[in-house]
Amino acid sequence: MPDAPAPEIRFRHADEEEWQEVRVIGDGASDGGGRRMAVREKWLEFTPGSMTLLASWDPGMIIRKHGHNSRQVIYVLKGSMRFGDVECSAGMQIVLEQGMAGGPMIAGPEGVELFEVFMGDARSWSDDQADYEALLAEQGLRELPHAKLRFPDWMNYHG
Image (cartoon, rainbow, N blue to C red; front, top):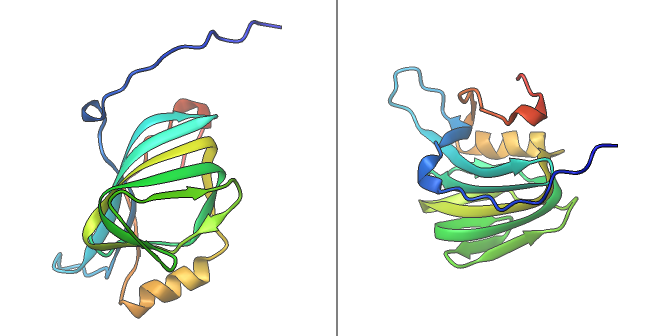
């Protein structure tokens, strides 16, 4: 059996990473004058055992109630968001234990910037699609396509 790789210290600066649009909603207006909101993330660490990221949400962006296959810590750096029934402003920490679902999450009027840490498999799950679509429809919105994401090689994801 081969030896496990030696532990290492890794350094990464956020300025060296590119933003990726990971979720997009809008009214779908084809004339370019419609509403469009997105979540952008910089993945600083993304391994099978952990993930850290910076996230920037446009004002009013909505993410459905969901969970991850890991423990998740969210820290609000700037702006505000509603997480379920709780208003979260800069300085607020949110902890979701593995298997917990939370949300929906709605960015405040100035948007929100987050630092997120996942301890374990960061891939997400949700069983709330119908409620999410109804929430979007109430505001005249729907999910829109986003650019192809650049997943790490270990995920073997070709979607």
